[in-house]
Image (cartoon, rainbow, N blue to C red; front, side, top):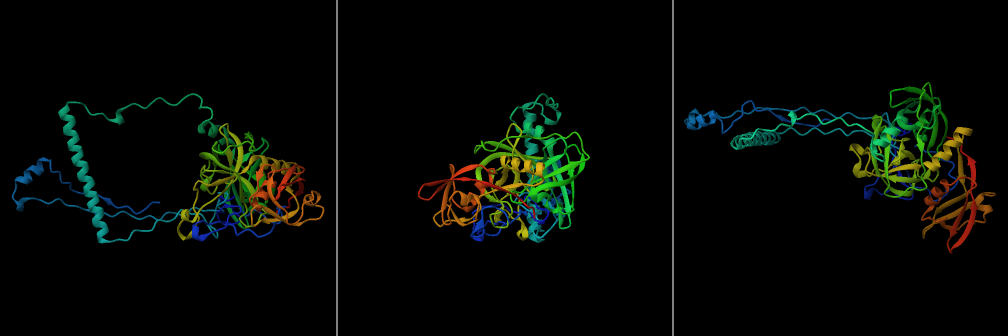
Length: 486
């Protein structure tokens, strides 16, 4: 959720839905505070989503107290003794270069924009006499320690009569052969990497790159909306595969409310589709693997666990509920450029789309620029993404699940319904303005974002049970309506 959004030119930061930004607490979200009352239909918004200073000490003459020359000098008069000379070559300071960035929640990496991820340049150290002196003293200590240790070691080995052993003389171990262990990170990477795509995107409002993965042999690729959004109005998308193949891609359809898009690559054959898993049976603590192109480093593989489930997160960063999703939280490293890449289980099955990261202020670089992974990343559950992708491929348009009521967080907890649209699923179920929803089926609803996220995980025409304050239960048949991209 970015990550790294080419349209926004900055790496967007994921905001756990319902959480309030607090500069005093050191956390920074790209999103604005959520509106007090928003439409639970979710329409009306879109997911817009070194080298450092170093001093080298090079002594031209080294004083060895155990050498024959030192013994001779010790017998000379003070006037005859020759002091050791020291010379210090000053290291050069090389400024770190800036890496283009994009919106953070989804880890997408782009050309510089209003708020850009970049590798912070290291400040040049102040040149001072005391600094040089300390560096010289440290270098001398190292040289003396090395000489003394080497001499003592030599004498010890020599006195014991044993021959020295050198690791460089040992032969190389046998080359790894055979099949990779089932359920290992290596086996997942080997299975999934050929299906992961780097998407290089450009348009009138900017340029950037993200990730995606192959759905079909005829070129359909699933990714995030914010990765390709900038190219939707006549821009260009180039898909680069693991084996170096390249092809031009076009946008088939996209859904800003769920941050899902499908593109189709042409001019490339022999594509390998991924194997889709399921996200409704994930468990906290389950190991997972993420693959993508963080900071244009294509084919990067990281691993971690499922840290939490059903985490309401705003994918769009605009502060309202139009882009809230029920995310899978993971500590697998996700950075700008990972957007749209797969999150897989240890069988190599895709169980989510990497979309967003959270970067607190303590992890931000110089000048307020956002940092990268801090172990809090978010992925769109594959069950939801699968349904949306199927709609887009079959009709060119996504379908959004809704109840037709505005909703806000109740003062005592839960989601309080506001205005009910005439003829909506909420009205047909008998829900009233002022009702407070505390559960959807067996899932607790602590706030408004949680209700919106829970509804988004269901399909149109699904029947769900709302538990209201006072333990009143109301059955609601969810509605569906087409999504019009921005």
